[in-house]
Image (tube, rainbow over all chains, first blue to last red; front, side):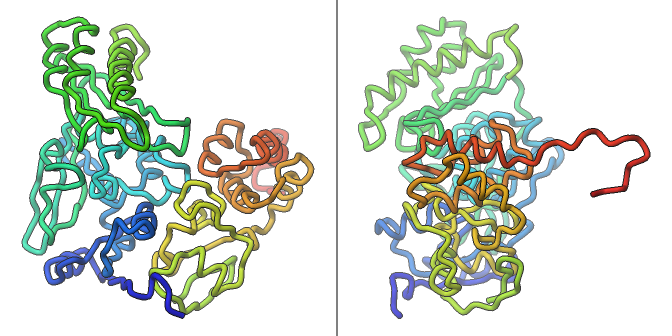
Length: 279
Length: 157
């Protein structure tokens, strides 16, 4: 029987090296990780590709381990494995909080950090965490490896600096000093895509990153500079609300998102104040 | 392609990009797994892959090569859980029920209410209001055995 999937084909690499060669040799080959967005995109016509590369069996991309001064998280690390990882819990608790907010348990068991990055949705739950943590994306190709600061990874709405022959191998997270904070605001407590999502670090130079308020995840340098310079949180909130560029869409309105972003900044500042229990 | 289905090794020929849900229902004739939303929101199609709950509507068949797949039909030893759904009004129209029970089975033998609510956050029910479902899973939790006396160690069961 001919069905909608008949025109699709799946390539099975024997190894990571083989996968990278396949990416070099075939234009238009789309890598697959946990596939939690795949059929949704195929069904609504957003994804026209017909040839796919199955990365799921490549075990070396699942590694989560300290490597010298950084924590390496492989692209195929699932949200569940991030939640379970003692290293992630200790060094990047805001990533654990973000992973717990992604879909339900079924999606957490399958969806991957690399997939969230590659998908590049401005609402991606883990992306503000990576921006606030000043993570580095490790990209691999048949000719070698290169590193791109996460904050320079997106060029615009769902577009990245990746070349067509590259795969995301993982991310490297430096030690994060200061108190980490994360909050996602959606339509309901679970199974929601964010209206606004924020990750932040309370340090001498505070870092604040937001999703769903611009075409890509953003850091807000003017707001951070105000907080660093000792401005009140009310002043910083005013700056933040003019610094972001939210839009009206199916999930929320620009006005609501701007308001909520301001509320979240206030909560971040209050909940990470000295003397408060460590988050 | 070979995988383990409800404890038996099977060899099924199907398109590698066919959804696991469709392979189970159409090729393996196991229709206990339901389709609700088809996009990972509702959990009606929940099955276990290597013991972990997944949405069968989101998994390409190729990704269960060599894996252990367990559907509602293969949940052995969880009769108590299934009966508790009946006793406590955990099922009404029934479309979410197989997914609920499989997701609950993935929580282990003694989940507390927090574990249950978190573990079932990806399973939607439009009838029960969830209370009956939570009560059923709590009631089915294996009670803690009284602390064993010293020296009884190793005498399991």
